[in-house]
Amino acid sequence: MLRTLPAAALMAGLATTAAAQQASDVVATVDGTEITLGEMIITRSQLPQQYQQLPPDVLFQGILDQLIQQQVLADTVEGTPGRVEYALENQRRSLLAGEAVNALMEAEVSDEELQAAYDENFAAAEPTQEYNASHILVETEEEAQAVLERLDAGEDFAEVAKEVSTDPGSGAQGGSLGWFADGMMVAPFQEAVAGLEAGETTETPVETQFGFHVIRLDDTRTQEPPALEDVRDQLASQIQQQKVEATLAELEGAAEITRPEEGAFDPALLNNLDLLEEN
Image (tube, rainbow, N blue to C red; front, top):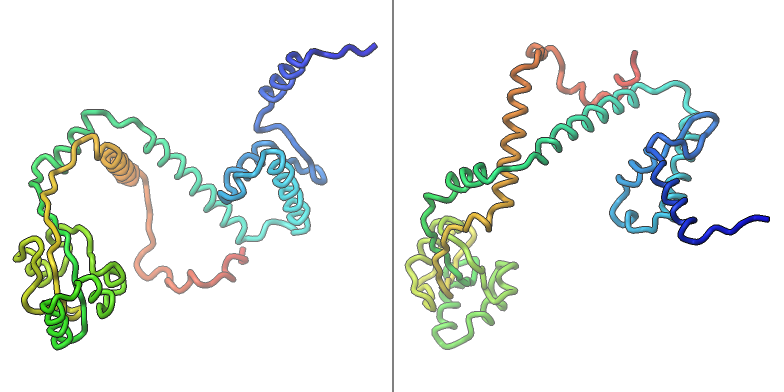
């Protein structure tokens, strides 16, 4: 008689089987060409995000079908076309370079490195003045003067901005530009804002290359330099990037590299795909 295994024992056996499987295990063959579990895993990792949300059982069969279809099509091509060989070599080079960069980016950044980067970027930084302002932008000085007259007569700034401002972004928001720091606006605009008190509106139109502005300063604030903890991730990324660039410069300096003499290759050759098929 067949003996029925307890459910727990059965599940343990399945888990052992799954754990024993390796990326090199052959999942299917097509006329003798092997399709491995590793190839399926890579295919799954490169799927668009919306497909990666599908259940594993659906993905498994779909990916296997795709690889089998690709293989039967690939088998109809005699030899390997030159453009494919070049593409494969480029892909190999790119993937290996990516591995090297990933290893550098994953290296732990020490607290000492973070503190040094923070000191370099922020320790000597002075508090910055920030402004919250609104404006109404029109094409001519006469139109801007008419806007000022409407405001002097008591009309609401935001409503006038929505009606006549030619700035599509701020106009729809009642002229609001939000917060900005010194130097973020063109000079005439910035100077006009800096000369206002909170709640004041420019008495005359302000001309810039964009047209004529009527500006109201809504508020000001002093922005202190950020704390180390607030920029830790930003600094870590910066340090890692610097390490990548330094390593790349070191490797290039140590490598024996030859480059073509000037004029040896016509840059227009990059457009000649026919060259890929020549031996």
